[in-house]
Amino acid sequence: MELYLGKVMNLVTIFTAVLQGFAHEICESCDCSLSDLPNSDHGVRSVKTMCDEGTIEWYSPYGALSIELKYSRSGSYRACFVIESVNTELQVSQESWKNSKFPLSHRLPPAASLKPLVSINGKQKEFCVTSSTPVILYLEPVRTQYMSGLSHVKFQYLLESRNYKAELDPIEECRPCNKAELIMAYCSSDFVIEGRMANVTHKDEESKSYVGVHVSRVIRQRDTTLFYRPYRDSKELYGHVVIPRHCEAKKSKGTFLFAGKVRFGELTKSCSLYLDDWERIAANAIKDGDMLCTLK
Image (cartoon, rainbow, N blue to C red; front, side, top):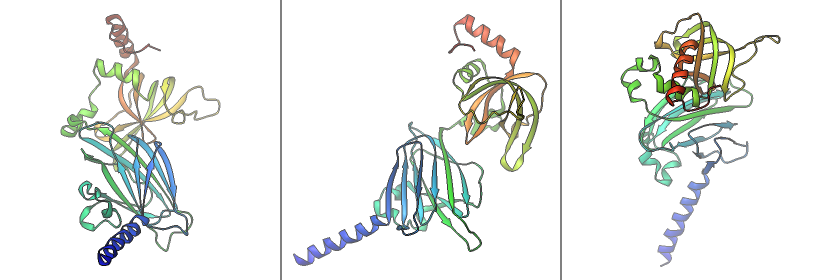
């Protein structure tokens, strides 16, 4: 009996020691922050997100951070993220969901359960993985002797349904929006503006094209910082709308309607067309009872 109790106590001691090195945390808001104090236990910390989009700020990172991303809808989805590291390098791996369900596997995940994804020193471009189960990312900071000052990691994430058509045919992202898509974009997008194209800058290393737009009218905007006045006395706002590089965007004359989403702090186009064409489509939609919102 004493031998049996001794074994139980040893197991409890081991389990407690493991959990002390692995802190479970819930990110109850879409944006949250955590920090590692100099005298704190630098084990593996675990964060579970509650939103499909948000930001995690990690100050003075030590040890490692396990982030669980879980989509709010069922089915296959894309988990996309952008990470910026300051005064630290970062190794990012994807942890096996099967292994992650066992509590003790979190302590120091074996190499066999981790799939290396990307190494970061500075700001990394958008990276996406597909899954139908929660995505577990494992972040491990590596500080070199040449780095000084406070270290910081900014992790932005976005979970979204997969666009199978675009995955099979990248040109799908470049086609003009149909009537139903235009109406939905006008009524529900993060930003809807009227404006003229100023320039187009292609950035092959980011797989993006940036369209400079002189904004004559803002119909809707979720983030008021992304359109700005280039000069104090400027009558028009200015901003950059992002389009996939393979769409081969070119500067065109005339006034356009642009609608899209704010994605990792950038204005990403969903639909665009000449303003005259949109006004004609909107007038017919109102006449036919197809308009989903009030025209502004």
